Image (cartoon, rainbow, N blue to C red; front, side, top):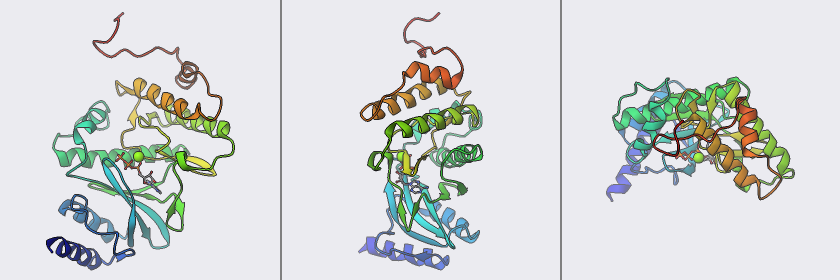
Amino acid sequence: MAREDEYERFDREIEAMGVRIKDADSVKVRDDVFDEVTLIALYKLVHKRLISAIGGPISTGKEANVFYGERDEDEIAIKIYRIQTANFKAMTEYLAGDRRFSSVRGTRKGIIFAWTKKEYSNLARAYEVGIPVPEPLAFDRNILLMRFLGEDELPYPQLRNAEIEDYGAVYRQILDYIERLYRDARLVHADLSEYNILYHEKPYLIDMGQAVTLDHPRAPAFLIRDIKNLNRYFSRYCDILDEQEIISAITGTEYREPSRPGEGMQS
Ligand SMILES: Nc1ncnc2c1ncn2[C@@H]1O[C@H](COP(=O)(O)OP(=O)(O)OP(=O)(O)O)[C@@H](O)[C@H]1O
Ligand SMILES: [Mg+2]
């Protein structure tokens, strides 16, 4: 079959790079993942000795696939944004309002490469100020390498599946991360949920491609949405704080429901 030929070609090309394929059955070409561009990016990263093994898929998301990998003794996560099927139109708004990326050109590939770099930069900013996130290791084109949050090839569970003893304490810990992200890293996560937090002894924030700097016109709205999401989830398990008080404490200003152009009264 043509599909089988593709798989074999893929395995041969990857192995020719000197990369060990740990799980031959599951690292098959997803037609839309391992296209030509992605293979070149993978090749670059392997050539720089940043990847020594590729394992099975951990997750298939809306925009990206995450694979287990190794760099010598270290476990890594390999996040690959799909060129063909990622929703690059939705990415444009997050990029345009962020001064670091406002000049990005609007081709599909260009947007996705910028998005990958943006996630790398966001993780680096958060990591530098000491917020628990996966340490970013490298990026090339549409591939991001980061430290693996897990053990023995098993990722830590998402918050929604984690066994938690003291929900109140975890809630406060995440609020503290959001505040430090805002104050120290000058970022708003913008997609915070029980899916984008992993948990093992403490919470870890992940999935930061969409996080924006505070000068983004929608940063205040994204912050409120994050807090609402967090409160929605934790209200089932513990007492939660008032949304407006949280926002005021984080931003140090009076809370104001943000208005979007054309919505509500303009003053
Ligand atoms: N550094 C990591 N270590 C371990 N597991 C990870 C890591 N990064 C991601 N994962 C796993 O992969 C899943 C998806 O990752 P992530 O949320 O970053 O991508 P996504 O939701 O697919 O992205 P998008 O929504 O943009 O498509 C996570 O829930 C987690 O299980
Ligand atoms: Mg996610």
